[in-house]
Length: 397
Image (cartoon, rainbow, N blue to C red):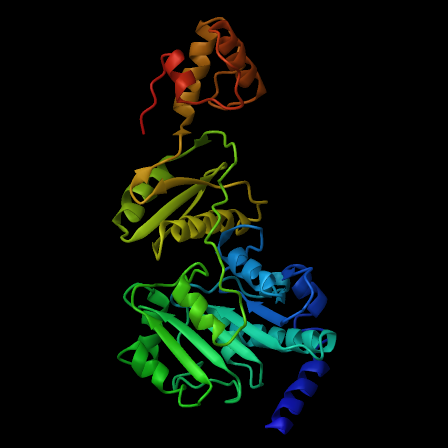
């Protein structure tokens, strides 16, 4: 076993300078995330899923990273998109999937060697999500602990793991009726159930799996069951207080929505069950989640996907706000048609809002506050339903 570890480390060090497409470990990590915290309790390498990762200080990914850091663990989160590679392969027929997995495994070997050279005497843990779980399970090496979520057990048709049997491993798997990724994987392997699939690689004393019938693809660190399972392998704290919604204590302007978003909301979103939430951002971006263990987790995931929708188009994410909780709309939105009506009404009242174009700019805001002052009302940052009512413009979701 020691010989196998030695050979893996030597191979990793030989390729640590650059990957096949020329990216260095430094570049992979620079476009990912490396915490500024010290490695008091050890180091965690976080492998993201098949989408481009969002390492902004909000969303489900950030909640996991933050909890690792709060537990005294230094986090390294490589970004596989830092080098030239095929685009995401998240949906059938999973184009270029094998090529992507080989590239990601090469990247992972480099990062492991780099982290071991930087922290030679510290415990080293792996945490993989979805496609990143495949990466974490595929390294023929020994670690102090490995946790994977949102993926099945094993990396091939025989459901084998490449990890050494000495590695404490915990695989957290959702219900294939909720998680289409698990459903597709079981079909590919020819297994009848998660239990059948996961019983094959877990004969080793240190390899374990947990099946969650009520969870799908998203595993939240605020779920006490998840914390308990992770603690068996990675030493995280158990005093997590729950998700922090990004929109809290933030003054948002009304966000204009379009017909495509409304169609998504009234069609796909409203058909979903269990705890669910939808988030929106300026520029006609949105995201939603469902099947979470709590409303706070649903909101957190929705904010993550809203931010990720902007990142995937190369935009710097603008703040997302929760638009709906379950089927209830909780955020004031408006359309260009309503803005034009408000501008026209301001002009009729003798306050110049600029062009009647449906774009709420500085001139429209100045006209609004001048109008409010004439009515003995306090000025405000953003138009709202009260202003529309004073202007005799009626807002209707």
